[in-house]
Image (cartoon, rainbow, N blue to C red):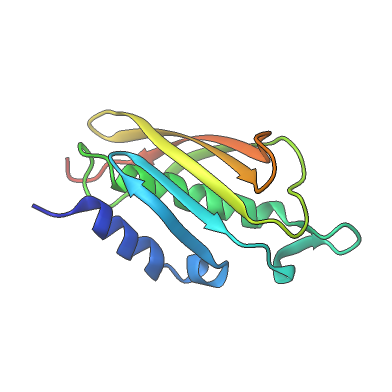
Length: 139
């Protein structure tokens, strides 16, 4: 039997944009994942404020959601994003890492459904939330 968490970790760590953005998978298993992205001035969207660009946050959330699906006991190893809605609640605090936690809460024959929340280091108030649908291949 394939260790889904191990496979998902290896897959996520091999994705070029994940490495380029400095994503670090900190927890994975049983349909949940957590990925942290350290603050990096290369990803600042507004030089005046130092706030990380929403595209970097979006990539973080999408990657974390996919990892959650890949680690779900009822899902196959591979997945792709069908739809991902991201609601930005506030700007991330400049200088702080952003952590996304995602949970795959339901799987059908062909679609997995996921929710995620991104926060920065010193607040429980979300930077962004997401809900999405991902493919379930070969089930």
